[in-house]
Image (cartoon, rainbow, N blue to C red; front, side, top):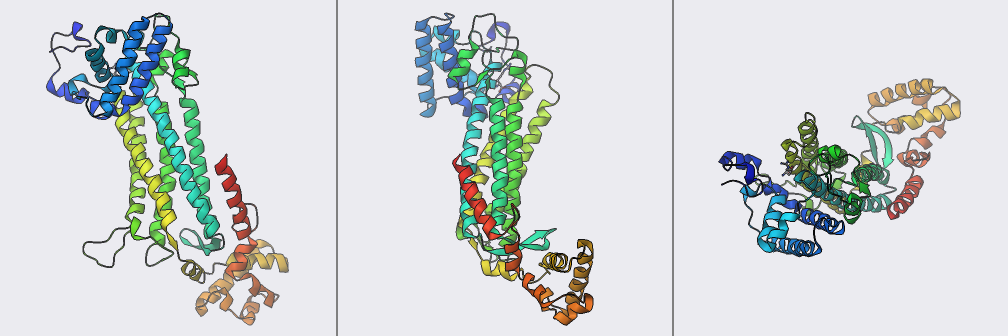
Length: 460
Ligand code: ARG
């Protein structure tokens, strides 16, 4: 049978496969609350502008509340023939209140309706992610405070580079997540314009008030161009881009957790809360939560790519391709919230093995830079020469099978005669980190300062 909403032009209903490929209700029912919120704002505006009567408006508002209650009570019948959430809400409204339901769609189209719903949904998602990230940052600061003096190797190329404090390492992630929150806020600011009332693409001949609906829905203003209003999915792309970058950060930390919890590194111990066993190897305690954080980052990046590719060939204004925006975004948001929560849980849960971290700084010539710096500071050598002398000493120690502080003064003097006993004072990792007091450096005193500043930033 022909469609109830556009049956006038249609003699027959769609092919079965058309109904299947066309239907979005399976996923866009998630937008029911936003759809009803948007419809209520639109209805109030139509009444305020005298476009529909107050009685009809009241009937519509009451009916929409009932539809919402029914959906939340699980009483709504979902029917693929009704395509999407917008048509489900409207047709149920018609069953409840009759004729006035048909007046709600005056001066509106599903094109501005879906853009509005999806923006409202994305705005909520941004707000939720912002809060979740604040929680993760709080965990990171607390741990950074606790481990401000714990020393471990800092790596470049995953080779021992210079000793750092574990608190400093954790605060590096605090900074990443701070930028991620900034990106989400930027996206929110640009998102927050109302497309409602742009209608199908050209605007409407009715004397509407788009500023009123914008305000009612918490938008800063209406969008300025009706064509852009219904064609724009930047807001979803920006959300996915910010989520992808943030997920990349989560993934890097997850990767470190996988490395740190391996028997070879043994820097941390994850409790049974965030690990799983093996069905064959009885000794195993696998960091599955971290691995899944790493993998879900891929999924989120995939969603960004998927939507970019859907959008890139579309002429203005709306095309049905755009219906494919939602599943990827919903899925990414779900994955995003899972990984932030799981990461916060893991960081909070992990037991830090300070002795193991320290022990692994005792090999790898990790204070070689400190030795070179000493040659510059005390002997007045140019840094390049000091680098060369130190390199020779490292080679010598390697040959002898010891670390730098295992060389005798005589052995050092054979390379550079002016070296004195004082050099040994800079070869300890404790002195090394304590000396890194430059702004943003790894010295425990600096880390404590950064912890304090980070806590202030979390308050604002
Ligand atoms: N279900 C559609 C979507 O998600 C709603 C908009 C339909 N508009 C149209 N002109 N067919 O994009």
